[in-house]
Length: 126
Image (cartoon, rainbow, N blue to C red; front, side, top):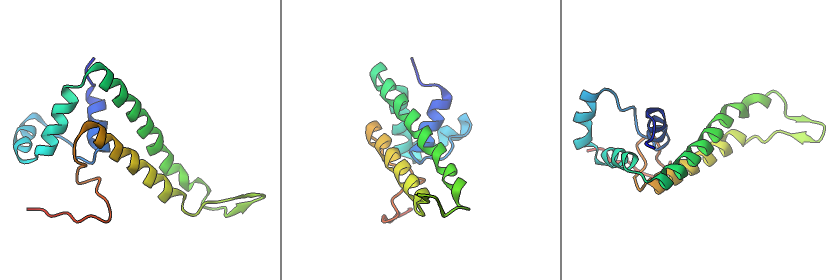
């Protein structure tokens, strides 16, 4: 069974690629952005077992992504009884999410998009 449009959108998003847009825009972008074309090719040509792994990864990524905004739920409390707030919780959750996003790119054999770059890296745009 092929990936749905929503699943493909999530894969693009998690891999750091911008929205794809309409069919006219797609045709203009693919020759220019080879990595995006490779991502599209891979998503459209997965085996059944690869799709199953990809869907599990999407589930994990969704769970991790939804946990990031809830990290702010306890910002008004520093300590309550024996519980104390982790001041780095949001950064920790974002780092974990990005690690899994990189694992998705690695599984698909594509380079991370511009929306998922390491803070230590340098991007050269020609």
